Image (cartoon, rainbow, N blue to C red):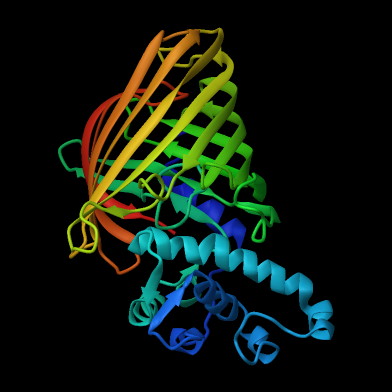
Amino acid sequence: MKNHSPVVLLLIFILLAGPFLLESTAQEPADFDRDGNGMLNRSELTIFFIHRLDPSFSKLDMDKDGIITDAEMQKARAEMQKFRDEAMNFNVQDVIDFFGEKEAYPVEEIRDYTQTNSRADRFTLGGIQIRNSHEIVSYQRANPAHFSYTRDFETDSDVWQAQGTVLRPIKLYAGGGDADPDSIAISAINLVPSISFDRVSSEGSLVFRLGGDLELFGGWLDLQNLRLYASYATDFDFRSDIIAAEFEWEPTLFDIGIGVYRSLIRNKESIEYRFRAFLHGEYGRVNDTGEKTALEDADFFRVGPFLQVEIRPEFFRRFTLRGAWTYQAAIDGLPKNSYLSEVAANCRLDQYGHFSVEMVYQNGRIPFTQDEVETLTIGLGIKF
């Protein structure tokens, strides 16, 4: 295979996955404000999303308290648990990511949010996600894949630049909604196949991953994710050959803004911030370096942190600045140590952020493939 652009690979992946899906529903958040105070607390917000994800549930839960009779419960238990977990794990977390961690959220805000932002009101790709990285994170926490195109009339050539991942998480288990928060319990297990592409670097790379994501709830950490991947990396001409096992550990702490947005000044419109931090390790072998001069035909073992901070003004949440830094200490193999620094500015073109204009500066080496980069690109960000 020669000169296959990431765009072609992306289209093939999407076409094989199936057609677009469209969901619709008509639940009103005010109907779930049981105490009539104009606010939805966490319990009311969860019940609202249960009804929103499965409108047929409203036929059973007529008083909208999230409870049905014993006879009805026996019949609907499996479906109810499925949608309860989905409401808590995806929709509620997206609200927290979007508005920040609060005790309760105004009904008007939730109504406006669901009219324009909810997954139930937008096209989806049948579970396929397009992001800038391969980790499973909530939609609001993820950053977009980056694409740009250059037409060189002097040389009569086309240059595609693309950087991102196509992944399809498969939920194997969801639970933990009633777990004791003082003890650690498994809240989700996912199988995650993905294809990462990078044509911003000088040599370019493709990384195929098949892995698992284990989410733990409770304890002194609000959430923590353990990820393990079997990975294969090559270039776009399929000359290099790298196989590896990758592992990651990522904590989430709501109170200090690790994983969710927090305001710098409480109860006042100001700047919001959000951190991400995780430990990444990779162990494998380079079977063929191809034209990647930074590698050697030998085993390698690298480990190090990934740190990221994002900031945005509360009065204009469509604009985000982020900075990220990755360091890999080589316990074995070449290069001995490496880093990757990234600074980016992103402005969403639509309300939910499917499309955006993005400027990205990178300097260092891409983890795993070790491609050396120092680039400044301006292009289209895409996220689903």
